[in-house]
Length: 401
Image (cartoon, rainbow, N blue to C red; front, side):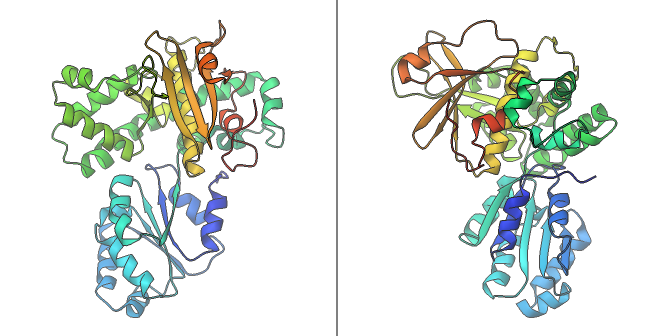
């Protein structure tokens, strides 16, 4: 079952141009499925997968030939798609040579590690590529699978008519995440557990020289417990008996492999604002829950508050990736503990959000008093986060409040 992805519009844009496509995203988010769907009507497409040794050898053999002969050796593809392109370090420079020789073949490189593929391609393919980041499903994509969902109904109308079915589906996504198989598969719990293990064994451990797999798993578990809280690298290094430099490297690696992302703190350089802290969130809450073996879909589970915060901010983060990051995302806190969960900045405009599963009090007035911006509340009765933060035209602008 193919599910429509919002990234299809950007794939169509690439197909009308001549640049090299870099399609980036974690394993099993549907990169290959998306591209095969978009290219289904295009004749002469050739797919190579560099996780497969014979495909690597086929590519290397072609790379030793002059460009025209190389294309003949690869069956004269109209489009050459290379999956897991980061597995072969020289891939980007070879593709650059073919591209610059003006062969008629178009190229698409797919990678599950932005650390490797982007660093390999950055110099070789400068000015020659278009990047598309594919994350796990946004909720608006996952809802298409539900027979009762009406995508033509405005998001706010759906929210006002917040049905039991809508809430149950929301709890499923919060608990099991939004990878395609976690959305449409039968054994969601086992799938997400296996996917969590694949992250560690296949991407993270293979990319970096990780001396202790147990340390990086322990780090992830600590971060899973601390979702919604500011993270102290010094505290993490002490608890894991590991150097601060190693923790910093692991955190960067986890971000580059699309497991985590962070929000910096927002500050206008006033002395009573926290300006150097970070909060880390999981790109997919199912991965977070797999690390803790906590898959309850009960809306009174003890961690529902921070889990809801992670899910909401991840929805905004994923949409921001798709829209080429037009928004700057922050959190805000003062030394007196006034706090805003999400501050969004675009083109000089600010919006601020408190994210509460069960709002019991008014949002803080401190941010409004300081910046003149009202603090909005995002609760389950207003779950269409990405549509709410981004305008309906999809150009990354901010809605009015």
